[in-house]
Image (cartoon, rainbow, N blue to C red; front, top):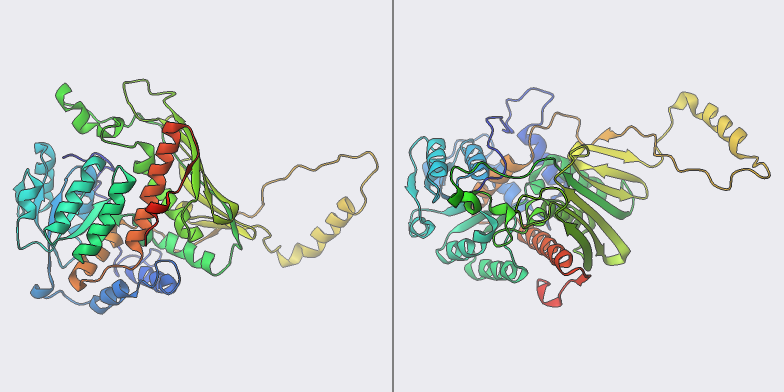
Amino acid sequence: MTNNGKSASGKSNDLNENQPDNQVTRRDFLNAFAAVAGTTLLSASLPWLTGVTAQAGQAASPSNRVQLGFIGTGSRGCYLLELLRRVPNADVAAICDNYPPNLQKGLELTGGKAKTYTNYKDLLARNDLDAVLIATPLYEHFQMVIDALAAGKHVFCEKSMAMLPEQCLQMVQAQKQSGKILQIGHQRLFDIKFLRAMEMIRSGDIGKITQVRAYWHRNNDWRRPVPSPDLERKINWRLYKEYSCGLMTELASHQIQVANWALGAFPESVSGSGSINYWHDGREVYDNVNLVYRYPGGIHLIYDSLTSNKKYGLEEQLEGNKGTIEPEANRFYLENPPAAPGIVQLVNSIEHKIFDAVPIGGPSWVPENPSEDKGHSLHDKVINSDGSDMEMEAFVAMVRDGRAVPGHLEQAYYATVSALLGHQAMLENRIIAWPKELILQ
C-alpha cells in the first residue's frame, strides 16, 4: 500500500478560536453548518453538530478518547495524520503500510508511539481500536472497507469508494448491516465556502440552477519518482487501469459530488470522450476527459479535466438565472447587480439613447458581453482550510458519539458511481443511463 496523492505540507489548516480576527474560526464553521443543517443539504446533520458543540472548549476526558488505526501512510495519509494530531481526543494507536518509507513517515507523525503493521488484517484484529482510516490506492478500498466493517470498526475511507459501481453498492449494504459509520473523504462537505454556497442556493439567491460547469486543469505528468523499476506500478498506480480510473475517480468525483449536492439529484445519464493526447509515456489512463452529465429537468453538468495546461485551475460554476457561485474561489456573482445609487439615473439615460431607436439597416444582433459584476465573497474572512481538518474532527466526533451524519454516505455513493459511469461512457463511446439497480433504496 502506498498513497502518493496530495503532498503533506507543514501548513496549518487548524480552525481554532485563537486565530486572527480576519480568519475563519471554528465557531464560523459551526454557524455555517447550523445554517444549512436543517435543509436537504445533508438531510439534517445536527447529530454531529450537537456532538461537537457539546464538547467545544472542554478538555476531553480519558473515557472520551477515540482509538484509531491508520491504513496507508503515503502523502495523503500523512496529511490526514497531521490533521488528526490537532484533534484533542484522537489517538492514532496503530498504522499500516507495506511500503517501508511510507510506514516510517507515518510512525514519525505519531511521535513513534503507534504500533506498526505491514498487513492491514493484523491491524484490524486489534480489539482496542474504535475506528480505522483508509488512505490507500483506489483498487484496495473495497476489500479493506468490507473487512474493516466486518471487524466491527467504524471506517473513514478516502474517495473514491471503489473501482466498480457494484462494489460501491456492496459497501453501502455492508455499512447498513454492520451498523458502523462509513465516511468517505469528500472534504467539501465540511468546507465553509461550500456550506455558504449551499445555503445561498437553498435560499434562492442565485435563482434556479440550470447548468453546472466544472473543471480541474493541471500541467504535470502525475508521476512520482521510482527508486527501482519493480516499484513503478506500486508507486504510480494512478496511471494504470488495473488500479485506477484516472482523472474521474481522483479528481472529478469531488466536483460531481458538488454538482449533485447543489442540484439535490444524481445524473440520469452521461456521455463523454477521453484520450491520451500529451503524456505518451506508457500510461493507460486518459490525460484529458470531457463529459456531459444530464440531470432531471434537462439540467447539465459540463465537465472537463486535463493535465497539460493549468491556466484555469479548478472550479465549479453553479449557474442560476439570478447569479453564479464559484465556491473554490469563494465568490458569487449576480446577473443584475444593483447599480451604485449616484449613477443609476445616468446609466438609464445612456441606455435610452442607445437602445430606444434602432436604425434601419443596423446590426441584427448584439454580442453578449460578460456580466460586469466583480463578484462578492461567500465568506468575508480569510479561509485557510479546504475542509479536511473539520472532516477529521467530524469523524472523530461521530465515532465518539456513535452517530453518523445523515446523508453523507449517500453523497459519496452517488458521486463515485457518477464518476465510474462517466469513465465507462468514455471507454465504450456511448451514452450510459443510470442503472435502476444502482439507485439506493
